[in-house]
Length: 251
Image (cartoon, rainbow, N blue to C red; front, side, top):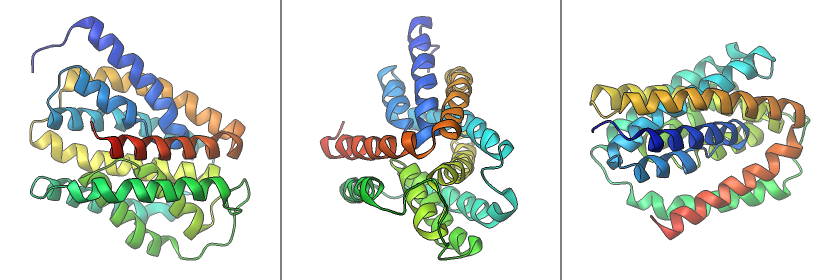
């Protein structure tokens, strides 16, 4: 596409900064960024691809901060990272051949259920609980399937990962957010590689928004560390419900 106007690009950059902050805390940044890209005039496939590029910067920044603060152990995440990458790549390839209309009906129901879980479950807190499965099994069951979903459809991926970390690995909500960002980053990279190979990424837009994502994600990840469950829990509920409403109402 032709180079977009500077004032439009400035708006996209501002939206990306806000999306990066929200995404680092509770996920769902694409709920802001993707509609903004469509509003700016990008065709749907280019908007999806460019959204993956700009979102990669945010999830990378948040992941680095959480790792540096010791909120997640990278060695335990090797299998989940690998399986998420494979799943996301497979989902990105599959969506080019299959429609995703069925998921538009199923996902809102799941997200509403997750919002209720985040709101009422006693397992949601600042203390770790006993894990129910191993990290490698988590990678096989959750990493691949949610990674596939992210490459194939996408909305609510952060909520799916977060609830799985809490329910299956017993992570507290702060650590679950950290693990979610690492797997989000992995799925974004895998999907981006295939979109880029197809020539769908609008690089100058995605890179400009990516710089703003870095700033937003830095702020958001610091807020997670300092405020923990008090901040994450209500935002996860709000984001899950907001994505559900958007999917139910349509474009």
